[in-house]
Length: 334
Length: 238
Image: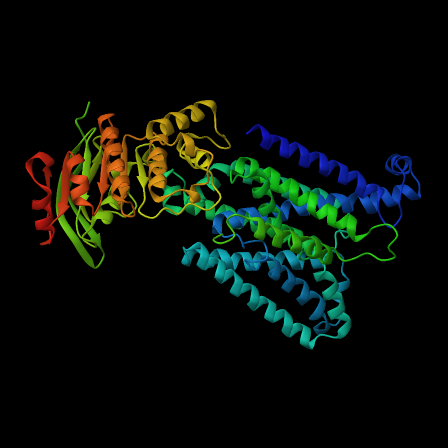
């Protein structure tokens, strides 16, 4: 038990170090005294630190934690190692909202894509719509695995609609959309971050409070019920929480891959435990560490360009996931 | 104190379009090992589902400690009956200790992790069942016999007066089978009330206190084990 608390402390320290690294590193490498000056004195550095780097670092931390906990909830509820925010079509729904905004805009007399923050609203609307459909389906489909497949179907249906839109859209709109799908942690300002952080923290705390019912779900529905757990309630909780967490991140940052799938797995393997009392916090920390690390890589000093965050999460994440699968004792039947 | 902990009163079981069995009456005494027998599809599982309030019975009533089963809440039930299901569905990568600790969930408030007294109960139960040396192993790595011992320890950790086991010995070799029934018998002597379905009638019968079974011609009878023989039961099953 004690060693597991140590892992959480270590992950927190690493996250703290990365937080400062995120402020120091960037297309321009700053010294500690410059960062200090930027944080507390009005200057050009103040703009770089407060308006550019701080929101970006905080966005990475919150998004990483949100996606990771969202993935953890889905993996537990569906008892399926492949479940994640992508799977239920929630990310695709957000994509559809943005695609409609960017690519069907030519149907209107003015360019609605220019209105600020509208893409966020459209993305949340798209995610919520898909989530709502999944919840409707879940009332008809009791079996977790079947619901997962239904979610996949929903996702590919939505993706097909996006493809149709792309087929007819002007090339300029397609480019904008493709850039959005690559994800960006730079588009959230400090004001939006307040809302963002409140929602993320509230749902992570909810997930912590659900630790016992989530543990019971690991034993199968029959056993969970025998332990006094109302499975219907847990189902609603998981759909709502994972949907809101993933939907919000997609809305602000685009569909960010791999964190939701990989971070909970790495957490379980490090902790050697499925106990959600520790796993929820550790997954959140690890997701934040992973995404922040990827973001720092994406804009290393000395590079003339910034890589899209989704490119980096996949390049870093895919080998990690494959490594885990090979190392995992249970690869044969997870 | 009630001598009868469970009472089936003229219970009919079945589904909307199919009646399985009518007027089942059985009074189960505290601290006894009871076998529930019958051919597949006769209604063993349906009766147990009625007892656990998962699938409503069609007629009659089931009482536990003189209280109708339908008025038990999910939480009360989880502190009254522990179930060892026929198919264990435990996710891979869970250690035996972790698995046993989850059986304390009925006694937990929101966000309460394992407490020292839970740890004590886990150790006590595993010592009693004889699985101390397995606590740090993964459940999925155990042999079928070890798994069932762990599952019985889970029921003990859940601290319920009643334990239901659905075919606990179906995949076991003869040595493990006898070990499991010996274990159940001594549990009953400790005061636990046990209902166990099985197809291993001859192996289980010598350990039982009472037997209830679905006859081939759609009736249900129960007898004290001293008043019948395994052969008589098997004859009336076919």
